[in-house]
Image 1 (tube, helix red, strand yellow):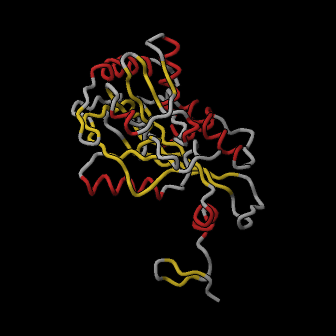
Image 2 (cartoon, one colour; image 1 turned 135 degrees about the horizontal axis):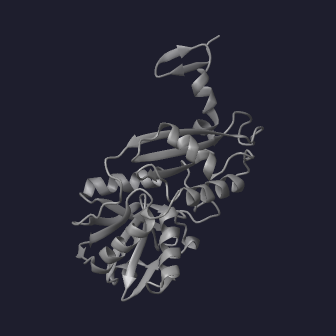
Image 3 (tube, helix red, strand yellow; image 1 turned 90 degrees about the horizontal axis):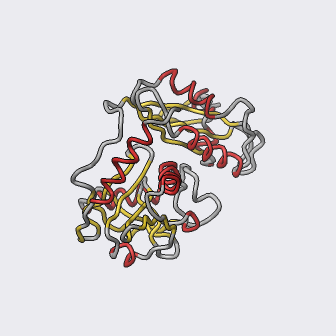
Length: 279
């Protein structure tokens, strides 16, 4: 007897490939990483794997003993061109309903070719606004990249409707959290500031790399501090970060113009430091 309808087509059973991702589709216990390949190298891969493995542990996955950054580096380079955007998605194997009966993970790697072998400076910067349709929760899973994305989709749609390049989301306490796919940084004189992970933002790979690099080379003090919208509006400069685009300057936020002098200097220094690293 038929058991499934897929896009209007009655099927006798769930197709094999769909069955493999059934838990991801039904329960969303999925993690993913978006990784940039530069000239055949992935300088942030170990940071990506650190976040992924921490998330798998938090969600109770049974991580295979051969899974590590080296394993996934080899897998990615089997199909990735020399410059690419890679998405690594990991989900729980079929079995059980809310309470799983099989904690072994499965994975999918997809790649998109890029024509650039380094981060690009966005001279005109971003025009961003404030999302009013959604707030982000704050809990033990906020720092991981999961498929629980309706709030980010709502914010991206709101940005498009208003003619912005992106939108900032507030957390459940009404404070600045993050953008749709980026962490938020700002300058207060010579101090580099960013939202602490305790505010519910994703534990960004580039965020972590940037903070550690600035502290290590002594480029200035770093402060992880909570921020209201008023605090951010009073900043000297604002920028966003993620592992695909690096540092992205914000030129207009909520109708106010911002320079990007310190941000561009930081971009130049960090771009050179990052690309000089080996995978």
